[in-house]
Amino acid sequence: MDRQLRAHRYMNYVSAAAVVAAMLAVSSPASAQQANTPVERGRYLVRITGCHDCHSPKVQGMTPNLDLALSGRPASTQLPTETKTEVHASPDLTAWTGPWGYSIAANLTPDAATGIGTRYTEASFITTMRTGKKPNGTPVMPPMPSDVYQNMTDDDLKAIFAYLKTIKPIKNAVLAGLKLPVVAKPAAEAPKK
Ligand code: HEC
Image 1 (tube, rainbow, N blue to C red):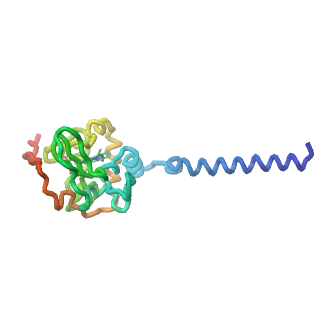
Image 2: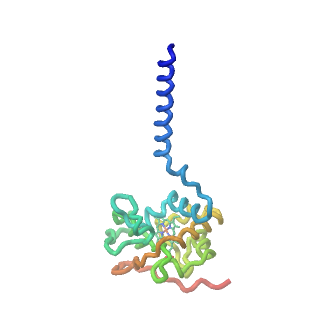
Image 3: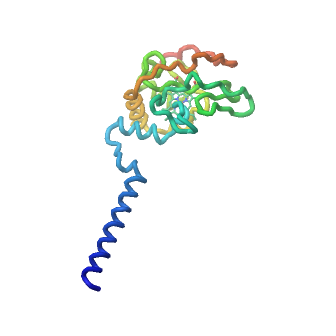
């Protein structure tokens, strides 16, 4: 093989390798974002454990509207039709009904009035995620997957809470304008231990 041909082949390998490297860079964005701090890990966990599926308004289909990330049911979302024998959801999955009654995806942003901001501390957040009970003692209704999330480690739950504290506070009262046919009565404050 003459030297020119060999050099030509070598250049082909080099450019093929460059193309593969570029493809890998595009197809694995996660590898570029190491979760080094608790907040980064929390962001990562929130993105892979489905919180946006139910707690974020959607731009279309199941794509979360990140401008309104985790702000719960938007006022424009209508209630699904009532059922006692099936599970019905609004198209954006922020409003639900089933045998348990209605449940409306909460605002998880730090907004003091309408988010979980002032209602939760790190400790009560962990307790809620572990026990499926809100700080006032009422059960967290389906389809919030409490049975799944109760298996998260303390460190993971702390990371998620730390991340939720850093996201944009969005004022959105998720129950605003709703006349829920079946209103879950808030239970009395949980007895202090
Ligand atoms: C399949 C849908 C779904 C997914 C996924 C989901 N949630 Fe929920 N979540 C709900 C619904 C609906 C409610 C409201 C339940 C109620 O009011 O009883 C809720 C309630 C909550 C509450 C209680 C809020 C309050 O008002 O006290 C917290 C905290 C919470 N979710 C956190 C999370 C986090 C963190 C994730 C991701 C790790 C997540 N949820 C994923 C549907 C979901």
